[in-house]
Image (cartoon, rainbow, N blue to C red):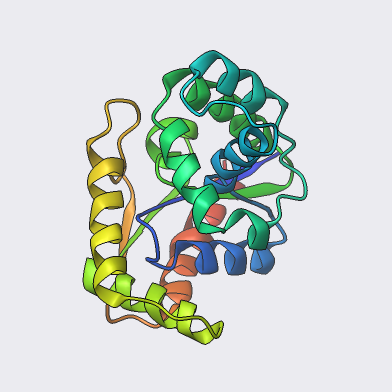
Length: 217
């Protein structure tokens, strides 16, 4: 890390609230924000759009190196079929290496960056001065996802969503390459019974303290 940029690394499982928190933190401090999960989804979408195999690691790596991080469309990339495809290529070491390189380049932007994902504090930006691990119980996260889908006017099966949350957790935590886990020096935020405002205030206190330390160096 250079003195020109300040990196905030935010990790955690799906639907724990890290995306909402990350965007609010970036807005608060005037920092650039990247949802690193969207980089995998963008790669998967490019493969699907081109009719390419999701099982060819060399092809997937080539596409990953061509992904443009600016202007990733969350609404389009959030589609279920893209998420399923992304989960297949996200376990490929060559794809992960390509996207981690791109994410690190993004992280170097001045004056600061907020990156959220599964392995930011442990792999992508292990020297980030602020690391947060945002989590919540599987039941709470499934309920949030269920309510979000209903809120969009579509139907959903809570039990199916709950099982999907548990499957994703198992896959993310037990993959051989860059498993999801808190960095040893990460601040833990369990949002199971915490409002986004409370989580934001807690995160802000950690960030302000780190910025103060950084300024005094």
